[in-house]
Length: 140
Image 1: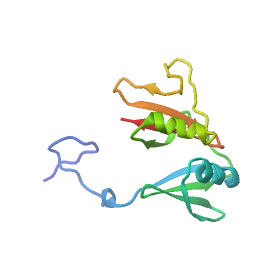
Image 2: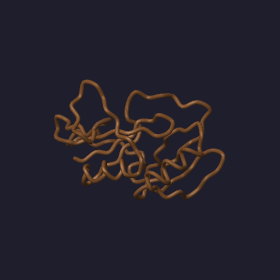
Image 3: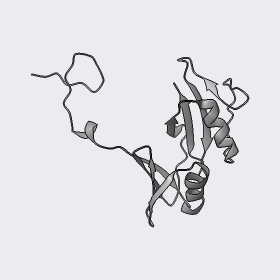
Image 4: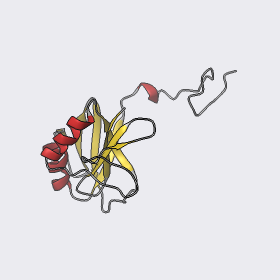
């Protein structure tokens, strides 16, 4: 009989749901789709594939991002969406050139662009969308 595990423990067989083979859909909320569309499409350069009264749908590297229209965005005190980038300096400069400001946080050491080097060596920078959702770019 196979052992069940919720983690990635080596040598332990997990019961599979079939979802591990399906395309992921990412979600982020907006109260106002007009500035959200301008931000995600025009500033970040994402391809808008559909738009209705429920959500804006963007194609992002093979993943669908649904920017869902809600009455009130619950402000999260953490990153809700992020991109893995091959060159964080280039990505940070590109964001700034597009009018996206990188966030600065008290208590963590960030370089002149706002990039933080994590203990693992990953480099991370954060920015916000028009609804105050925290987004990030990371170079591992």
